[in-house]
Image (cartoon, rainbow, N blue to C red; front, top):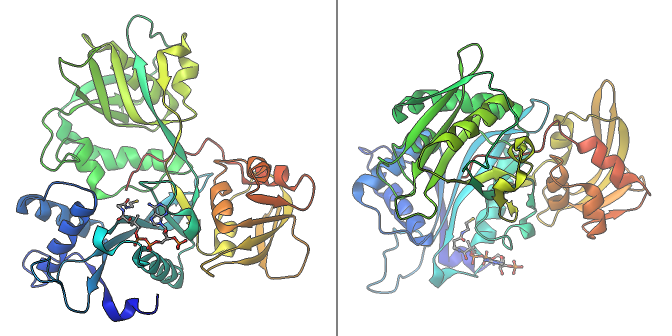
Length: 431
Ligand SMILES: CC(C)(COP(=O)(O)OP(=O)(O)OC[C@H]1O[C@@H](n2cnc3c(N)ncnc32)[C@H](O)[C@@H]1OP(=O)(O)O)[C@@H](O)C(=O)NCCC(=O)NCCS
């Protein structure tokens, strides 16, 4: 990797304002991201909009630039050959606790520069910077499951796609306590962050949302750019009349078979709101199927239905990947529902937080002692520790898979009880 510093230069910057001379650098970066994800070349208007969103989130753009001679007629030296975006949001780590996390996004490496260690270099530098800033956690969502384990990321939440049969078969064992009403989609520009904030505070694994979502749920932007005039919105009102849930959805068209409604975003801050929004979706005339790409794996809907087979679910997919940057800080931040002591020997190939940690939990809280030469109960790498951190996978399963070495019989089950959270972790924020 040493020759990389000769050929490439890494620059980090915040998205510039349109009247700033540095704006062109942000534009080139956005175009490189679009190229990396095989998007159509973005119109000036769309680039402006994307940069505006980046500015609202205070994202940091990292670009890798060719420092030497650039091949003639090829893209200029001002266009990054690799991109890496970051922002900081909160992660719900169970029992209402929120932890700041460095979110990694927009990772691309131009095909003609791939497999030269550029991703490794950007990731290594950025995670070290985040740790220096005092952050204990990093997070990302992955295009491929084979890329990020090597950097210490482990799968902490999963999701699945569902197709729900909403014909007469759909009958829920639930008596509504609130009501649902249709609204102008633009009301979500104001309401979505508030309703999501309520869900975020009660859902382990939830990541605070970036600006895009408010605009997306309200149909103000689509994943392809411009507005989405197909988006429709219904709000759920709790027994006290407050809006405690919404669903944003769009019709898949008269050529869909059966006629299908697609959920764009479904956010419910209470169990009743969730079921009642489904009752609403199922009641939409002319439609026989509702699809949702981001459904929880542990879905209460299935258990509320008289005929659970109305829900046809895909296999579970990895969703949120976590990477503990500072094990002592991350372990002390958690609330543990069971008392106990665990000595964890953690390996970290990036050298950020390896070592032995003794976690002591009693009624008065959790204390973590780093170092010490005590024999470990469990030996694992930081990716496995990150995966069990929110109870999304049982340490017993990871021990059976060889990802955790259990030196003290029963320690994996003890860890399972200690790391449990109050409800199954789920993340509704893609970034
Ligand atoms: C994925 C991507 C960013 C990798 O960039 P890169 O600069 O080629 O990666 P590096 O050269 O730094 O490789 C680092 C390591 O990851 C491995 N690796 C990289 N991409 C991989 C992939 N898709 N699957 C499996 N391993 C991969 C490399 O073999 C290397 O392994 P090693 O360190 O054990 O030798 C790049 O291929 C890309 O832009 N893909 C398209 C966009 C994308 O999928 N982005 C990710 C969004 S979440």
